[in-house]
Length: 306
Image 1 (spheres, rainbow, N blue to C red):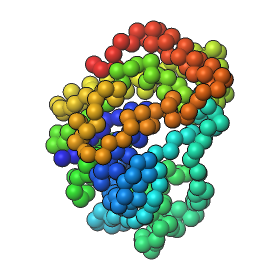
Image 2: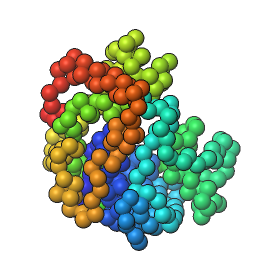
Image 3: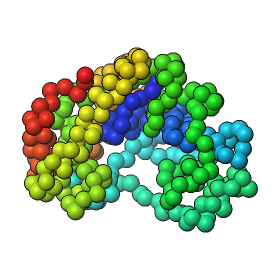
């Protein structure tokens, strides 16, 4: 049975993806023009690291072909289950903290995109890279591809992460999960800590300066994410799709999903894994608490569920 996880940004998706991977469960992302399925085969799991083979299948329907095409990549990896860290411009509490090693990617120009997305190169890694990435300059996907029909793709995944809504009948055949935070201040603080990575403003990562100079800029940005769960619930009810609520603070992943290998529930918590502790970091953390408290009071938020 497929679980559809109706969570957007800051709703535990990273944790769920890692939890699925260490349990050999498949994950799929549904985009308008691509259906990307990730299948993991774990050889060694010894937390905090694991040894596994990852297969990625990118389903796409080209306009110059009759059938759905699949481009595949298989890699073997030994890595930590999770390493957290944001580029210095996005993390407010600890802007200097960064554990990820960022690999230099090749960015294709328009001429290269047009050339290497042709059928001649379908068996190359370059073709795979072009179609697996989320964005390109211009309208490459719109020009080359038709919108993908998930019902015509192969077997269902264990977890579906929809960046667009699947057909109603498809959803009704799945277990629909809507995550929410009971600890509302913590939810807001986590979002505020990454303000700089989502809002293009003159304040950069300095959300406290933004708050002191343009409070509604910060509050309206928070509204988009804080109330997202309620919007999803309303849409599912309207479409007559049953769903289960998942309390990210208290519910047990194993009880909901049933998979044996469990992970520390605060593993992906940005206010924990950045390991702040210096005076200036504690001060910035207090800034976020102040903003969160005022936001919650201003919006009169008592529950993130309907």
